[in-house]
Structure formats: structure tokens, C-alpha cells
Length: 142
Image (cartoon, rainbow, N blue to C red; front, side):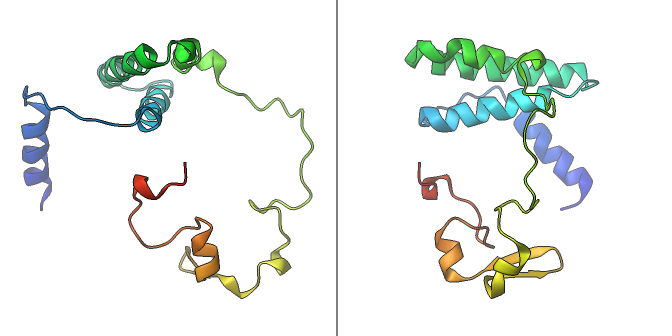
């Protein structure tokens, strides 16, 4: 599909006023709202895009708060950058900077890098390590 066709198809969705009904667990809706909060946080974001994303996120957030009123304050804080965690340097830096805390020598043959893509053995795959399979939210061990 070329760019013009892609824009035409996106315009069909963006220009549609048709409403649909979606059913999601609260945890998935929370992640969508969190993603929208992150989307609007960069300074200099195009104001119309910020307005649209925040408006959608707040509508979705209201659905969460209707079910769980006690999370309303925390959800609201997500729209305000002053509540974002900022690294003040007040923590102990680990000696090993690997994400998993292991020394590189401990990784062994179960982790192979090829062209910046990682593959893992079956044991690691069972632990939730990245694979080539498309992610499926139903597979997350909530």
C-alpha cells in the first residue's frame, strides 16, 4: 500500500462518526489510558493532537473511576507532569548494568544476538522473554 492509499484509508476511520462497543478488562483500559497520558507528556506536542488524546483518555479514565473510585486521584496525577518520577540520583547504582542483574558471563548460550534481534531458548521463552510471535494480551500472566 502506498502513502496516498494509507492516508485515504486512515481518513475513512478518522472521519467516521459510527460508534462501536468494546468490552475490556479494567487492567487493559488502564494501560490504554496510561499510554495516552505518556503520549501527551512531551513538551511541544502538536496541541490539536494533545487535545484529542487527552480527551479520549479522560473519557476512558472516567469509565475506570466509575468502577474503582479509589484510583481516581492516581489516574488524574497521570495527566500532570509534575507527578512524573524524576531521577534525583538518590539511589545506589548497581555494579552490573545488565537489565537482569547477571554478569555477561552468566548469560550463556540461551541468549544469542543477531542483527540486534534476540532469540531465547525454550526455557527463557516460558519466562516471558521476547519471541518473534505477535504479542497477545490474553497470554499475559496477570
